[in-house]
Image 1: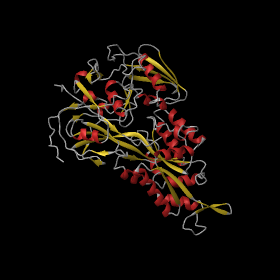
Image 2: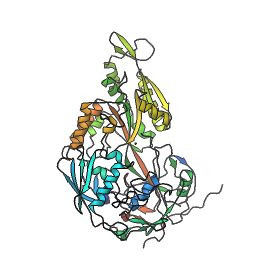
Image 3: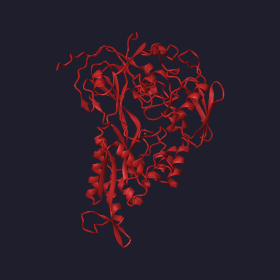
Image 4: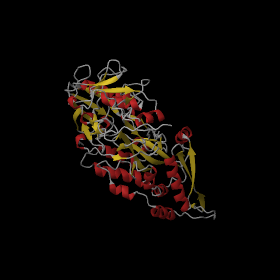
Length: 533
C-alpha cells in the first residue's frame, strides 16, 4: 500500500570552487554507513512526521535543460528521463536510448524506446530525443560537453543520427541528459516522460500511470516545499520535515546533520588538479614540473576531505574500468624521486641564503614558485601549505598567493602565477581537451603540445578492446610531461534518516534514478522530543 502523502526532499548544498559499456543499475548495492556528516552541527532534534518533501525554488526555472538551481534540477529527475544513465562506476545504462552504433566515432545512429509516453499521453518518438539533444547543444547547462556536435536529426519514429566534428567512441556517455517533447524548449514546464508529473497547480507531483512499472513507485504524491537554504534547510532535515539531503562534504558550505542518519557516498567528476604556466621560467623545464608532481601528498588531501575523495595521479576516476593503476603508481607521491630530480637538475645553494638556486649557463637563477590557491577553501589551503612545507624542506622556496575567489579567478585567467590549484567538473568521458589541449577553454597555462593533443584524440577514438592502453598512453603523455598534475576526484553524499528508504542507487548524474525500486517506510523512526532553549 503506497503512502498517500509524500514529500521526498532532495537538497544539494554544493559549492564548486572551479572555473566548471553496459551494466545494470539494479545490480548495485544500496550501500551506506551510519553516522554524522562532518561540518557544523546545528544541533536540532529528530522529530519524524511521516511526511516527505522535495525542496525546490519557484523563482528559478523548472525546464530541465535550462534549470540552474540545484534543487530544481533534482526535482526534474523525477519528471524527466535521461537518454541514458551512468552508474556509479561510469558504465552506460541504456534508457530512453536503448542502443547505438557507429563505424568511425563521428557518425552515430541511436535507437529509442517508443513505448514511453509523455505526461500529456502522447508517445515519445526519435524526433523528441533528437530535438532534446539539439536544445542541449545550445543550452548553458550542457553546451560545454557538446561543442563538437555538428548536427542531429531523426531518421524515422525509432532512430536518429548524430554527426560529430571529431571522433569520440565514448560519445554515448555524454547523453545522460533529459528528454523533453519536441518544440517545448521555450516552455516553463516542458512535457516529460518521468515517473512523476506536476499537478495542475504545480503544488506537488503525482505518479504517472504510463511510466514503466509505475505500480512499483513508492508513493502516489511527492509534495513540494521551499526552504531558502543554510540553517533553515538543515533545521527542516533535522526535524524530519525533509528526509533526504545531498551534500558536498568538501565545500565551505558544508553543514553537519546531527540526527541519526545513513550516508551514501557517490563518485563525481569533480577533479582537483595543479596547472602550470607555460611562460613560467621555472616550469619551462619539464623535469621541474615532474619533480613537483611527486611532491603532492594525495593521501593527505584525502584526510583533509574527511575521506570524501578518491586520490589519483592521473586524470581518470579510479572507479572507471579502463583506469591505469600502473600509471597511477608511476606518477604518485614520492618525495625521494622529487629530491633526486631536483638534484639532477643541478640545483644548489649558490648564494648561501638557505634556498636552492637553478644553474643557468655560467651563473644561477633564483627559484621562487608562485603558487596560486583560492583562500575560500581551507582544504585547498592546507594542501598548498603542505606542499610548500615539503618543498621548503628540500630548499625550494614556494610563495603562496592566497586569494579570495574573485581575485583568484582573475589571477588564473591573467596568468599571474607559476602554478595554481584548480578544480573542475570533467565531462563523463574524461576528455581533458579543454584543460590541456591546444586552444582549450580552460587551458590557462596556454600549453600547446602535439603529443598531448594526439594522445587525447587517440584515447577518445579507441575501441573498447584498446581503450585501456590508449588511456595509459594518454596518461604518459600528460603526466610524464607533467603538463597537468591530478590530485583527486571528489565524492559527495546522499543523507537520509535511518531506516526510511531502502533501494537507493545514487549516482552523480541522476541521484533519484531507479526510484521505482525504492521502499519507503516510517515504521521504525523514533520520534525525539525537541530540545528546549
